[in-house]
Amino acid sequence: MLGVQLAALLDGPVPGVAETLDLVDGFDDVLVHGLARVAEEQAGRLTAMAGALRDTPLGPAVAEAVEKVTAGSIGDAELALLAGARTTLLGAVHDARLGRFDAALGRTRTPWEPPPAAPPVDGPLGAGRSWLQELAITGWRGVDHDLVSSADQAVSALLGEPRLRGAAVLLDGLAAELRASFPVVMMDRVPARRWADLWARALLLLQPGTGGAVAAGVVSGRLLPLGVDVHEHGTALQIQVHGVLEPTDGSSARLVRASVAAAKVDTIVGPALWRLLDAHPVLLKALAEHRSVDLAELPVTAGGDLIWRDDQVTLGEPADPFATARLRLTDAHAPAVPPLERHPVRIAEPVLVEGYTIDGDVLTLDGHALALDLERLPDCGPLTPELVAASSACIGLVRWEAGRWALQPLAVQATVKRKPVEAHGGDWALGPTDPKVIKAEARAGDAVAVLRERAGRLLRR
Image (cartoon, rainbow, N blue to C red; front, side):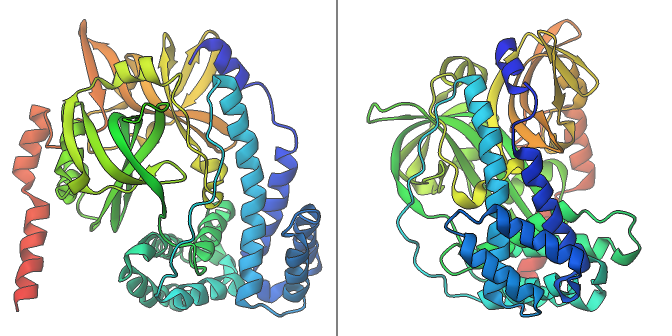
């Protein structure tokens, strides 16, 4: 990313974004108080949201839903429409922000083409929606232990259907945050935007026909990893590998993502997390050894997500992520963004930054400042704030959060004690390489092996 591109990215507010976010904040305030108590002020905010969508295909249905909700008729269909309206507004903000990013970097993005219709999911969709409906009626300020605990049964049922596990993790995460915030009524400030994000996304994912990733085709070629983004939850782990795909058919290089996940318990942290993913040895070895992966007819979604299948991939030749970034990032086509992914906080675009200076958590390039998102550095790899501060080149994800652009480092090149050093988030995918960490792991023991042995013993009884 050159300085002039950074200047274009940071070039003032995007017209209409602030007004749209005000409408979203109005709806989120309604959820704080609950739909059972829609006062005149809250009714006005719902009406304003519906008015903003008046000239869209969704407009008439949303207006009717708002009328019913303000009159006290709160059904499943009405809530789905309200969640859809909120998601549409944030989708517009997402498009405006991502459009500025693409224009600043000159990145080409593939137009969205709807994938084939997904087969219906047979599962306990209604149980999850029922709990979300109770939350909306009660409001965040009215949440109590009984209401939060009632989510457990819905989460357990959803986890039994693979295509609904994403929604299950969302419900579980929302319930955990609510539980940790008791008593919500005494909180000085409710995280209204975050909780409403989780509520709306979960409600839409639990609508028939929206759950799970749907393949839009298959791809063959060479995957060149750039870096890995680790998503850790108390009961789940996901790694998302960002990379460049060079198709064998000679078509343009593409930016893609490859994600794998596993269930976990909150006592498994740090480098031990990688052992939860040992069912994906090719991907782990590619990350640890900086190697490419050859894909054979691997399914891919319209949003650029590879549906990972270990029997359709083989380990390839060495591939330096920094060389990939320098040679391929400028001409690789970015994927389209699926409708339900159009949210500003879900923007995570890979970039290469060089020739900068760092002061604390701020990166400066050609006089332009960009915040560094150091809180996302995973503790299962060698990346540290100190290495980032000493770096001269960085592969990272540009994100939009808390009203600003920020860079999340995935890999850095630095100078430590006058020696060049590289650190990548996936360097410890086959185990830590730092002697101090290895000793600490040996003293602590293999928590994953112990838990698996205990689980096996219980199952044998």
